[in-house]
Image (tube, rainbow, N blue to C red):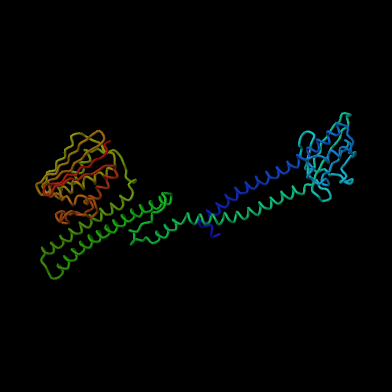
Amino acid sequence: MRFLKSIVWRITIWHSIMFIFILFLFSGFLYFTFSEMVTKEVDSILTRELGLIAYCLEEGDSYSKIEQHINRLRSFESVNQEEIYWIIETDRGQIIAESRNLDGQLINDSEALKKMDENTISWDPELNGIPLRAMSMQLISENKLTYRITVATNDTIRHFAIDQLRNIIIISNFVFLGISIVMGWVISKKTLKPIHQIISTTNTITATSLHERLPIEGPEDELYSLSKTLNHMIDRLESSFTQIQQFTSDVSHELRTSLTIMRGELDVALNRNRSEEEYKDVLYAVLEEVIYLSDMVEKFLYLSRNTSNSNLIERKTVDGMLLFQNVRNHLLSLEMKKQIELHIQIPDPFILFGDEDLLRRLFINLIENALKYTPEGGTVEIIANRTEKFIYINVIDNGIGISEEHLPFIFQRFYRADDSRSRSQGGTGLGLSLCKWIVNVHEGTMEVRSVPDEGTSITVKLLAY
């Protein structure tokens, strides 16, 4: 039954089943309709003969005269008189008249009687192996005698016609079944041809050929929509794969750079005996790289673990003033070290609805960046404004700024605008990427405006509670 795994054959089988079912219904309807029509035609002849005999009996005609009337009946002009049989019996079964061709034989009754009306029945007996169609009627004459009139005719032609029709229907159904299977297979094969093209093209698409796309041809049907959907999916896969490749390359570069620096410092230190101060300088340089790597790995793991499923964040009400107080306490050492004035202006208390840990990390990263890239003695301002539905939080510094051509890319992982925002500032290129993700999962927006050597302003828009 391996062929049943093929959609083409399954469609063919179902097509054939439905076709033969409809054909059987039509064939049955045709067979029974034809049978009833032919039977009614024969019954109408027998009914007229019964009526004539009954009329003659009521008129008191002799039995020989009754036979003459029957032979002159127009209904039987084209019928061989030897094929017409009739019997007149009393209610006690005594035969008082019959057609000559019976030669004293009886027309046997049958268990399969069909009642035509109150006094008339019909059935299909046999006489000397010849099939007959018979009809019988009870008649009460004026002299109170009860007669049973039975007429019959040779039914060979009717049986032959019905049997031939049945045989033709059976043979035709088998022929049509074969034709339906072939046609169903051809139609299914032609209909599903685009699917085979999709399969063939899809099998050729690998990690090195994600630029290829499925052919989109023909009418805008379900297969057309399927091809478009798969192409959109491949677009997303190509984009994701490119980002993964870039991300892997950036991580490798960062790790290799730090390891190369540490190895170079240690090789120089071990090349010859040095003073205590020189060894301390080497250790400080290595420590700086270790701190950088540790910070990068921490942020990298945080991004990998927490940005994989935004449904895992814990949303609750967050006091905005308390949040910024905690952020300032966290950055106090950096603020004092660089002697930068940090002004937080929150005119009105406000409440946010979101993940407190993520929101704290969001503003720590933004304010930390502002502090790092602002010269000593500079100023960083945090200004919060509330509207009916939103909270606008601006982080403004008067630092080195960002060039306009770099602004579209600053939220990409490991991207650094220029040498001024390099590793010497302690940045990993992951902070703004994480900030962008946090804002997105809180259904907010983030806008950056910057002028080189004048400063940067980042506006975060979040839903108010």
